[in-house]
Length: 351
Image (tube, rainbow, N blue to C red):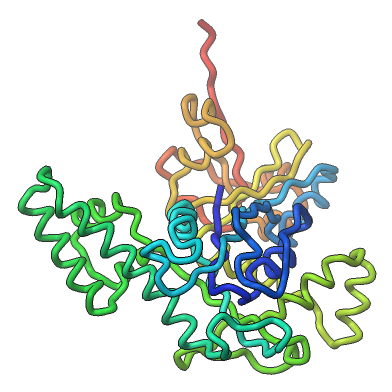
């Protein structure tokens, strides 16, 4: 399961964004810090028109989308690495996620006080990132204090801590393959990929994307999207149309997080009972895709038949594609491509 941690300073709009993204359960929202004490968890479907087109051409009634788990984590304040606020709890939850969705406050609502009394997006980002770096330094220092560290490992750790002291996150340090594997065992917070989200005012929805450190970032009015989420789909479409919008910004956020995880999607339409989308790490092999579907599929794997989803949709059916020779068979080492439709062939021996 792909897990995204929503982080940021208190009152940045993390829980509001969480409520915009998920259908249920909803997170508590209030105009004071630490409304979120324990984490909130919600599973979100990844928007995917291709999946529904596949179901249509094969006349399949059941459709199952790929999903992402979003975790709404308590707000961080300066000194979190030393336990300030809910720091220790905050940092622990971040270690559990695959990607950090960093919510940065741009909205100016005076009834929602900023934890540092002024809205300064670049300063807010710097505070959060500094706490992640300082927490990583503590992690490395604790390891260096232990006796069971080889000279080679100690050398690598010294390089890491030196870079962190310079304000360079672990994600930007270049390592050899062996060193990378070793460093990953520490689950460093600054090694995790981040996706910045600008939480804007409702009246800025139609304006150009905001910038942080000179680069455009995905902008969303979390309050508008959360309010929109309370309406039925038909009413949502009318509201969007009246505003001149084609899609909700939350769909863009969901897709952006999926892409940031470097995940691809493959599809199955086996037995024509269910069209299903599956998330998979890029450059994964067919045997790994088989294991995602069922452990027995990987264990008893014989071959995989594959075709690009759009090619299949154009042809009109799996049967027609098979007859025309467009579906190709591959072995377990086949590298699954994004938007592949796969049919795994297995052989289960009778005892």
